[in-house]
Length: 305
Image (cartoon, rainbow, N blue to C red):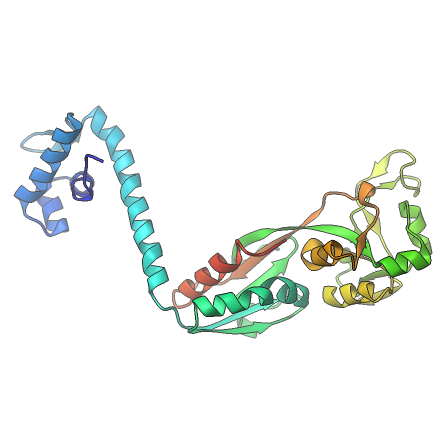
């Protein structure tokens, strides 16, 4: 690369300050030093970037084009330096994280040994609430929320989306048979949620007459009446594993069970491609910003949804 950081910084600062003298003051350099840096840059590029008069400086056409790139280069360098500085700095202090128990157990807990190794001085407090909480009231710094976010004054970072599937254990299906259509579900034990009721809408196509695959479809899904209901998705997962019935759960909870044969997906040909958004929400706080950022930067790429 022909140009140096010093020359780029001199050029941008001269333009932003309006004069070489003002730029020299801002950079805490001599006027002659800034002037020489600008001249060296133009010599290396073999083009005039600035037209100089006794009263003002004016960018040439080439100068305007180069200024955009110079700003981008300096911004990227500053961002890189800040990232390295954050890694070098030993972050410390308490960080309270809340999530529904299934997400806590399946997505966050498995990552915490590695997180603690990298950030040994951050003291994590992990809590689980199945319902939406008030962060200030519960003294929580980050809450993981699954589903569409309501309007809020909270900041949010999207962690991903998790597909919903209908599952049951091999032993249950061997005993009760595998349902081939939505209408056959009425002969099975269905496991659902106590609240909110919208979680008892399963993402499967149903026909306008109530029999699967017999005409036009209603893509609103199937509203079920649970044979047994629970407040926690993890309890529902355990009920399905214990051969108690059929459940509809997110992949982040059941993908490993399916891979290892403890659960089987059913009605896949009727399943709507419905995915639950997963977001981290938090209040902006200068004191917490580094801890919140490093936690979300760490778990974001590693979570399997």
